[in-house]
Length: 405
Image 1 (cartoon, rainbow, N blue to C red):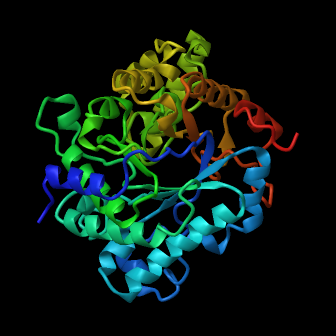
Image 2 (cartoon, rainbow, N blue to C red; image 1 turned 60 degrees about the vertical axis):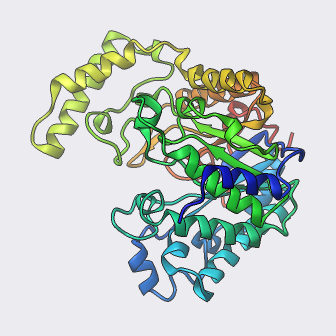
């Protein structure tokens, strides 16, 4: 049975969460999630798949973490999928995966980084352990799992380790935008109580629902969780048409758009015509026909986007913090980034670096820490040919990092 909100608050107060000095996180990067992106059933069926967990530990070396610290990052956000552990249920297999979470955090700490253990499930449909089940029928089991994870991490240094309870709760948008009774605040209070009971001194990261949007954060009443030893996070990918152009995991027409420049003010009528024609050709090749009206509308909307849109969500979070008397240093821009390489073809690097610089500066000017997404891949900041995943000088400059200077 789920805890009542009042009981969740009482447990948090009873277990040492109030009055602690919050963790300071300033410049961070999001790490890898999976190498093997199989279903949970496939992962459990293969004895080797979960033998090393999280499986990125197979190819991420201590030297790579050390390079991040040398470049000027002070923390790494470690996405770890709790789905397999939830699917196993309590027992030695689950304990082994939780031990892997502890070992992953230890890798970052040993390299001189602060560490966020980010519980980061995947959309998995009906599978137990997917993001849908975690906020659905299996939420009570997830609360218990978070308690067990918190207990295992409790021996890590509390001034350098933080537990993020759930990445981007992908539901309850109606509670944020449509005036329906919100579900997530009470659920988050249960998760917080479980984690705080298990780890009295460990800092905890809280967020809003609806994919951790800034507006979702701004819809929360922070007084529901009486704990000073927390940080509040939101994610920002605005302007979304720029950051997600060409992304295969989103819908049309944006998945067919490429070569949208940054900032939007660079979008001349000539570039708009070229982008539109190319998107129509790609959509026709993929689907047999193109939705010319939707493509034209998306291009026009991006052309009309003000350059200041990059900072608008940060301003929303800052106003919320000020309204509730929360120091802005306790607000974390937990994800921002842009897809800059699609099918091996990269956009002009000055666009990408300009976006990184603008978003990063907006967060810093607002007094917030930030974590760029991601370390590697099509949205990655690491130089693709560097064995230690070091950043290029241009990327370092865009993120304001000294990179060994």
